[in-house]
Image (cartoon, rainbow, N blue to C red; front, side):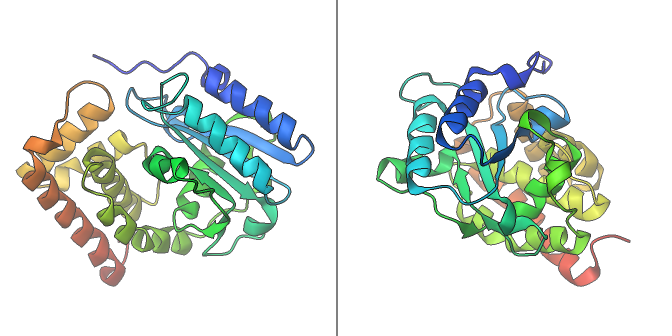
Length: 267
């Protein structure tokens, strides 16, 4: 089975609904709304999130935060309360927090399905330092499908390579702590980190596996190939039966990333 990009993900009902809500909440404060990530770079994969980047003039109000959480709980992911579908990862940046660029930088608002239980318990995301922002900003500057406003590239400064590489190291503890139950995503994210450190480019997750595949031992090659095929909807990747192999691959990828801190990221 081959992956087929949606005709125009900008017209996805979740995206149009999100823009309508933003227009109600802060019509003059929204500078840019874009679909980013794999959808913008190479087309949505069957198991990929719908990544959306919002850039605003200033920080969201508490009312806007609660309204966005309520909306996304209804429409994001398999556990959505109204229209279950593709998981949404929404990142919102207040321009003053990221321009001029500095690292670490602050994410004004973040929604992701891995935090659904926290949202249901009353958690409302507040501005917070986010080690992943160099990846988000670099990727959005390279590839973005603009839904409203101007392209991110016109608003956001380039991220220095040193900050991008540092962020990959800084994000390791969080990834490792979330491994159980999210094996495919963590393995593919680690593969993308390795590929970025060794090529200086941010690749779609399944493409990153292809980039590093030749440098892997047979066991890790098999594990990451399965993860990439699951991501593309080509295979059912049941990690409960491969927990030990997945954990070993994770440990070796983490070691490879950590080693780059001392040996230099690229030749």
